[in-house]
Length: 338
Image (tube, rainbow, N blue to C red; front, top):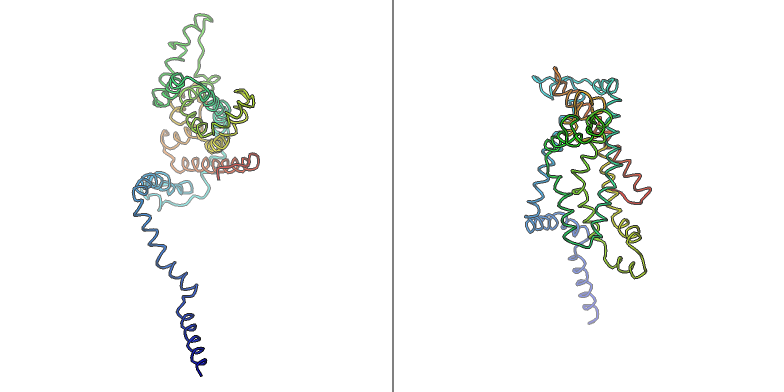
């Protein structure tokens, strides 16, 4: 008689417990609707200073990088200033075909690739060599002096730099040509067709060598010093430590910068090339950037749609090059940018 009520109470209690326990669906719905947005808002409020700092570069990217992409449609339109971008009639691939069929297409593309490849092959190893050498210098005063001397030219304006180059290398009044003329009787035109590429690349090396080495110095500073100590104990000299410790340690940075440089293969220093151009070296100094600038602003009849088509071609090829370089880096070095 007393057993039945107990079993009934126990069953009733267990049924109540089962019915009161929330199902996984209710838990999921509660998490989706209530907790996650609150937690996100709490994290934003707790670190609002960081989000405020992030808003500045995000605003810069939106205004100066993404919003101008709205104007890329000019490459496919017959732009009319009165009608505006949106109301201008469509032209299809007319201006892209005009650029491909232009007699200046191959010369401009060749000059751009020559300057960029020359600069990449000549200047990419130099910051690495400078950073490795400075990393093994024992005298801190000497290292700081070298850093200051090589780093300072980066802050010189491009206009001032080109003025210095012209003053030093002028075939008539240049300081460098004075002893050359005294010895040979004739000066060297460093801005002429045969010397323009050398002058352009190595003046850029003087200006940006120290600044480009900073990121490699930072990467070398992150290498564990115990690796060098262990190598010294095993009898490894400086060159073997550089080859087996320093270079593998900065290899990810080297690959990343190489991929980024490949993405800039069709972009030359526009201001510097334009300032160094003259009537004699135009055949070797006319690049895509200067050509599109002259088409859009320096001609008697501005061709904004044509200039936009040239810029769009350069951007698409640069994207393809950076994707190809990243794919090759992943296949060969097992490392990539993304």
